[in-house]
Image 1 (cartoon, rainbow, N blue to C red):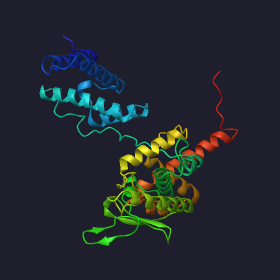
Image 2: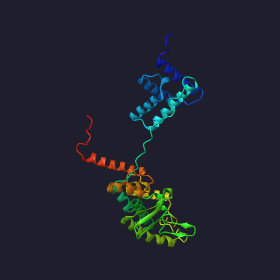
Image 3: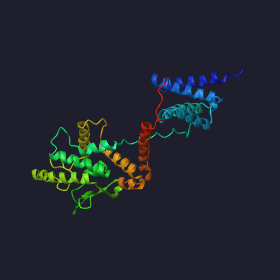
Image 4: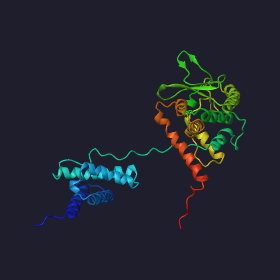
Length: 326
């Protein structure tokens, strides 16, 4: 009697495995169908490599994963396929058909980290410098908003660092400021991640916005006896500004100005980093100002800078224009 053809044997193995998933593990038809597709793809890759399904080696599984990645399959999908393949070969091993699982130790490619979103320079300036057209520009809340927004963009602060600022440095029994603005030296000192303290310059527009807010802040303190007298930024009730309220205010501000981007405080931090890097090319200085422990975290902004240059090139260079398909 002739040996069973390799393709028929592979189909039988997969069919038996899927039956075990359905009858023993009681998986849903949708999940069974997903496993069937992933194993059919594995079988096709094995046949293309000229190897039987139950003879695939570890290095070939790695090669198959690389082939899927080369076709543009995302990391999540590859991880799912590897999981399905691992389960199949685990079942084969338990049934005595294999000595080891060739998928063990094979990992999917790392998921690409999305680039942070940064505003164009003109949009960032518009956002932080213009009052909400629907509100009274001289109201304390609006002066507070502009001071916060200007400072976020001027110095690249995290929102937690911003709301933690005191109006001046305090060192008293049981309390020491973790952050404050020095109006004389035009710099802000904050305590960031890892309890690391840093000082960052504050630009003149932000300084002017801060002076305007400090004047209005006095009226908030006068109207609320229990106001937080240390906090730099206060709510209308005199409490220290919270990160959540800051997020809501800047989002509403962007919407009122008709900005298409969903603006949040970290967008201004990204914009600060991207624009300083574009203007200076000094990655180490940007790292220092952002308070990044590693230069690796700052290097993402070089990608942003390249994206901007690529957009300029595509828009301006006559040989970069794409030809419309016929």
